[in-house]
Length: 123
Image (cartoon, rainbow, N blue to C red; front, side, top):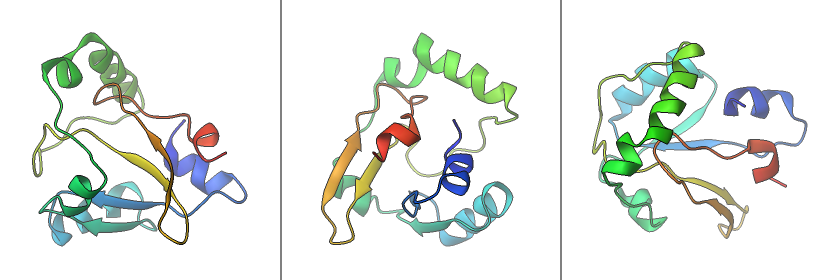
């Protein structure tokens, strides 16, 4: 299920903060059309990505059959691949972090199109 929908419709869902590789202007443009109320941090130097241990993917991680299936699912929802910003080989990351900064849970992305069950992820 879509993270925005889950976050907005689930009582007690933790605050969501995005880290993205583009400039502040890139983020403003993207989030204005996808989730205007979201909070996001520009990380064009990949400081947070590296700090969280997010790695670059290989060919299968980016173009394997599972990725194509997820791409078709996204396209059916009206989501399409846009202009790459930053290093397009860097895999996504999802972390549940406590108020004190401790990582409570991390989703190990199997490929670029993978995402967790957001409700289960925050339990």
